[in-house]
Image (cartoon, rainbow over all chains, first blue to last red; front, side):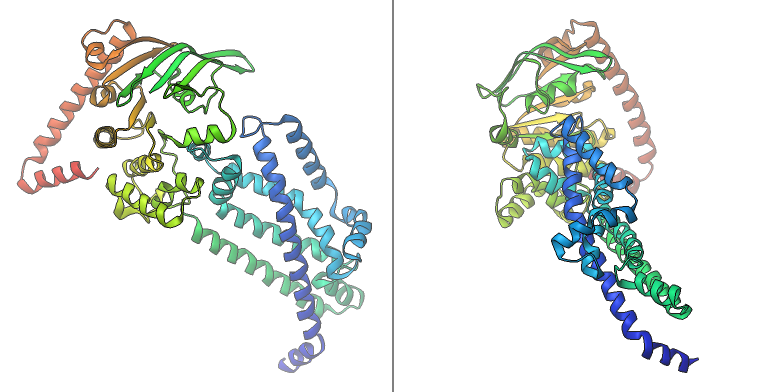
Length: 224
Length: 279
């Protein structure tokens, strides 16, 4: 049994470690970028909503429509559509680097809705109080919406990270590198069941770790 | 001085227009604790929100210290609001900030240095008797304590005016008394002019030197509290007064019952007094 494990690690250890790093790198980079885009979208959606700080019906419905459209395109199709864009921006549509653009664009509209729903949790009274003390719109976004919804934003970030790990595994089958790629290439094409199982086990551990860490942090900082 | 001149506010809803305020004229002199009383839906909350322009009046004007501020916008409006403190029925504290951070929130909006702000925050918590709760979060505080923190927050910017929107309506009777006493102290010692919105006559009776009665979007009666109480002219005022007397009688009965049961032993009596002074 131990001999088997030693041989397995000798043979595939480096590959599995490297592809785990690739997956994490691609997913965390894409999540970061998707959050920058998604928070911007969510802020615009929130403050331009009817009855909100700066009601703008037209802007609100256009952004809302774009976000919904982004969310309704199946990820595999989005991936293909974005091949030229990815080549233009990062120079390739393959490997870790190539998966960042599709993952970011795929996740941003999702992030926008998740962040928007976190903002919904901030009581209207807190917003009104901030307004009554003379807070500007920017200060209300920064010091009230983002600050007050922080625990919820962290929970949302975990959901996004985990969703992107799933997307990244799909990309693996199309030259995206990472753990999904290993599972498909070795497990599916070369009938190496053990490598596939190992890759899937690593994915399971990663997901569990991300979820429990996020839960722990969110619980710790939530003062409600 | 706060002056409202011929103020009206009409809301447009899907069902049509709704008139919340009709031709309101009112003057709050410096040093007053001015009450505005009315039943639910009389337009009280809209009225108080017109003073700091959280609601924009449909017509009429708002004058603060003689200056017409009705059309203030941008930076000027934010600065104006900074000088008018406000407290709310549900306290509206920031749940993710501790008591001290809540109190200094208005200061941080003006980029005061952190150290100065913290010093001022502790002074204010001292004033409201909660210096020992500076690190507690709203969820760890009782309703009365939360409203004290909210009062400290409203005073952070040295405002000349304090708006109270049903500030004691979510509190029990003993806590209400304590908060009202605190407002009185703030008025006497810091010279803050206070505008109080309430549906409880008891609040008016306890702290207000002047009162206006709001009914059906209009002011139907106004004057010195003593005069209005002695000779209520309008039916709505008589009704509100009658209700207050019935409540006072009920409370007196309840309190004497408590006092009797508490006076059985000296320790019980002391414990009762402690409870009373703790709120």
